[in-house]
Image 1 (cartoon, rainbow, N blue to C red):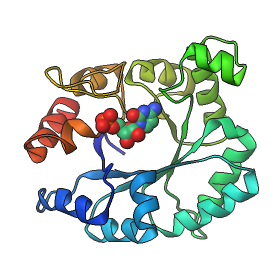
Image 2 (image 1 turned 135 degrees about the vertical axis):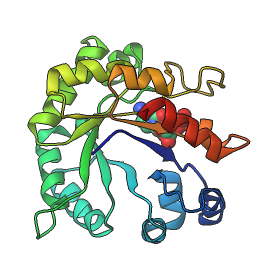
Image 3 (image 1 turned 90 degrees about the vertical axis):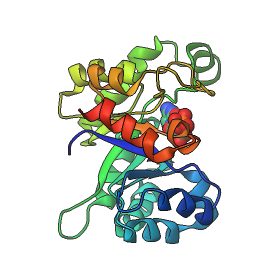
Image 4 (image 1 turned 120 degrees about the vertical axis):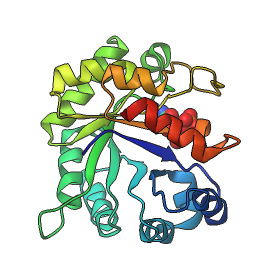
Length: 232
Ligand code: C5P
């Protein structure tokens, strides 16, 4: 898989999503469907967007006992998405079960990546609420290494962590990175951000971009600018 820009379709309904995707005409960007849209519209929204010709990252961040995750992944696998994810905190056994569930009878499967520590979790919250006392960057690298050992394809992380993840887990281990903003854009609620060009330099394999594209006056132009900065 080559480098690509994934648009976070954080919309509340099918209508809002299609109104947005219609602007792209024959261009079919890679899109991310998260909990908001999936819970609002159900699996049909995945089939509809797939039918329109888009690649899909289904961002549902599964985290449960291994057997439950395996069964859930079997269902998601039949939806024919291109990428989906789990929380690495579910342990190696859960990630291995997820891979098993995701693998179709013919041996093919979507890419499976792991969330390490959410970017909303900082050192203080991790120590206080989770009783994890190591430095957070070490925790992220340990979760990434555990995901790699379990056979996963990559992790969701900050572009700032992409180089280290590749060092620890290998260059082929994918880094899918949100927290991307244009140099002249709004930060929103993202704190540690990089531009698409910087994310490329840092070694991100995929950037996940939401509001800089979805809330732009001209979303297609914003998408093209991202693609140009990140992939050229
Ligand atoms: O609008 P924005 O570009 O901030 O969107 C980023 C997307 O990536 C959102 O869908 C957000 O939920 C997701 N995400 C994130 N940070 C993570 C994991 C996912 O921003 N650590």
